[in-house]
Amino acid sequence: MATNETIMMFKKLHIAGQGINCVVAVVLVVVSLAGSTACGQIYLEGNHAVSAARIQQWLAETGAQSPSRMAEQLGAHYREAGYYDARVVIDHDSLTSELIARIDEGPAVTLGKIQAQFIADYAGAVDETAINEILSGIASRENIDRGIRRIVEEIAADGYPVVQISPVDFKRQGNTLNFSLEIDPGPPVRVGYWRITGLGRTDTAYIRETLGLATGAIWDRETQTRLKGKIAELEYLRPAAEPRIIEHHADTLVTVEVPLAELPAVVADGGIGLASGRGGEQGLRGSIRLTVDNPFGRGRHLGLVVSRPNERSSESLLEFADPHLITRRLGVSAGLVQSRQNTAYDRFAATVGMTLAVHRRTRLSMELGWTRITPLGGSSGLAPARSYDLSVAAGSLGFQDQPSGTLWQVEITGSLRRTFVNRGTTETVVSSRRYRVSGMAGRAFNCIQGIQLRPKLSSKSWLGRNPELNWGDELFLGGPETVRGLAEQSISARGYVLLSLEAGLRPAQYFGAFGFIDLAYYQRFLPENDKRTWRRLAAYGLGLETYNYLGRTRLEIGWPEQATAGDGVIYLRWLRGW
Image (cartoon, rainbow, N blue to C red; front, side):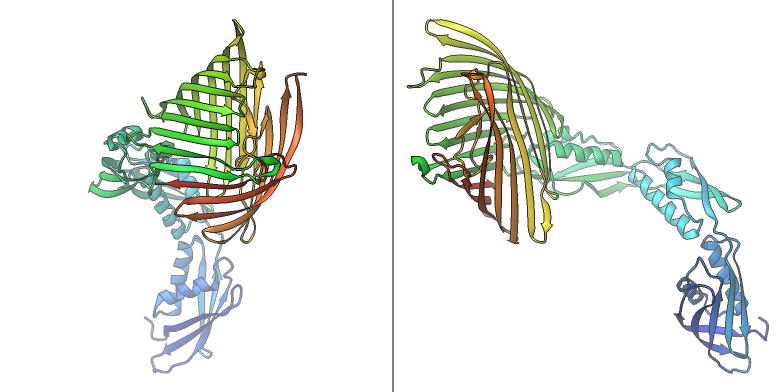
């Protein structure tokens, strides 16, 4: 080192601004040959693209150096930042101990075409197009290193964890830098063992078959996405956590854990209503459903429903379903129904059907049913009838997103019916075609802090020939699922459109209060003149909801706009699982 150069050791840096003539206040210890000391400042000129704060960091990393060495190091930092033509000159005023850094940054060099050269077989999703999307922008060392690390992560996610990437053949054309990447993906990771956890009553071997957990599968993102989709299709299990690698047997052989959780085996839900007594009808009414899910380890479902919808009606239903009888998509169902409607008739029905899971939100079914209608005393207008029903196309499509409160569901049912009606000593055979369309959509909105708005629109309708023969298939309004405050099943309809609007306030985590308005437009069928008329029905009310050891419990009190017999119902609903 020349004897007339001054050695500077940086003790402290402070940034005073940014841009041309930016001042960096630097406390120096200037050590000359004579051993004298002085304090000075550094002035920056021409740093448009690089901030003074970043230059401060660069200067702090240089250590004890001369002005010429400092200029050389700053130029190197500029080139690493993507300014390959940058020039830096630092002048030192020995009288004032001031340094002036004159910087000519030049144009920034950007990344151009990046070519990918795979030197071994690779079946993942990262191609040359994806690489060029990742490696873009200024051709700085930091940007290139970050992009290559991301490419390594993407290829590793495809099931190649020992990937190695080497950039080669750098060529600069003007202000563009082109180069190639030599990529050795290495061998893919394969699953040597699947470990399913969280199952108690569910058959593990059946789950392995249903989820398609094959030994030797490549653990790539396609496998992970497919596995998550199959878990979502299971109706009696839910994912407890993300499937993950828990053990490495070698570089390319791993154990993957699939954490699952079983839904409650027994679920009881229902409600009890108390009529206000207006119109002379008093007493309790309601229903209870007891469901046993997955008792045999493969998602079988057994349900029992007993209901008393109003003072003069009752119904009991026993149903069975196995959604995975033969494969994970093909299932069977059966049901028995015994009901009495308004002292007019007894109805007994039996059904058996098959279901096909097209998608985890779509299910198609075919159902064959037998129904017997027996008129009761005082129902001379009805004739005994037996009917055989074949539902040739039935499907449902639904979606529910709990965090956002979004809910929608569509169901379309079509059936052919042949009905044998006893009229005196003769038996008349009548054929009919019927179609039912129903749908529901809703979403919860947090309109004000602590207040939630929950609108829901639903619709149901029966279409087809000979509607007067649809005994026991009426659509009803009234009860907690339609117009609250109206006695359950007190109004029959051919179709209706229902708008329910709730505004709720939850001051505590497990307690809330809400108000509601139910507005229905329904269609009545008058067989005497074969006309359909539309009528309006409205109700409003208040409610409380809690989450406790009983599960979710709701208490609703409704007042119809035009009260009739038995209206003004206080209804308690609950849902509990064990």
